[in-house]
Length: 108
Image: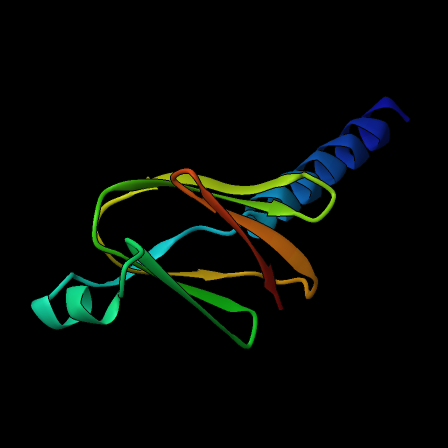
């Protein structure tokens, strides 16, 4: 009986770990900054595009970036180098994107 409980506990812990690992989105660098990129990013130091649950962020400076759910739960937090970055989010909804000191709402 104790072995059965120990196995069941191990399976539940493994499943929880797999869920937590899979559920954490991570920024992926897509491209480096070019002079054309800097020109296209108008007055702000970043540009954001959202298509099909993927957030594409273009930065021309090293910047701290945070993504929160509308309820305030931290989804992603990382300091990103200049470049084009992509973040895939699994759930539709409204998110808060904080880039440096600038904050804006994004909708998936």
